Amino acid sequence: MATSAPSEACRIAVCDWLTANGINPDDALEDFFPTCIDQPDGTTVIRYRAVVRDDTGEPLWDDDEVRSEYREVPLLVGPPDNWPA
Picture (cartoon, rainbow, N blue to C red):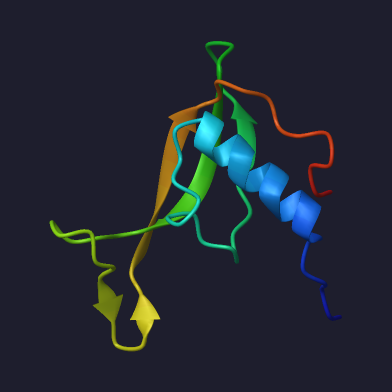
């Protein structure tokens, strides 16, 4: 089944939301949508897959694929109204 890309308005809202939560949108990989996860202590974190960069800020590569890792940050600002389902 083919999936469609989010609308431009939705993409901008998500980028603004990531930024408000201390995440650089350029670091969040598009093929793994950020997820809000409730923690046992009552807090919520955002889990996302991020580009791994070297000391100069350049992405690191493994063969022909950018290196990535999962990261979690505290949820500071709730997701936008047009949050993708």
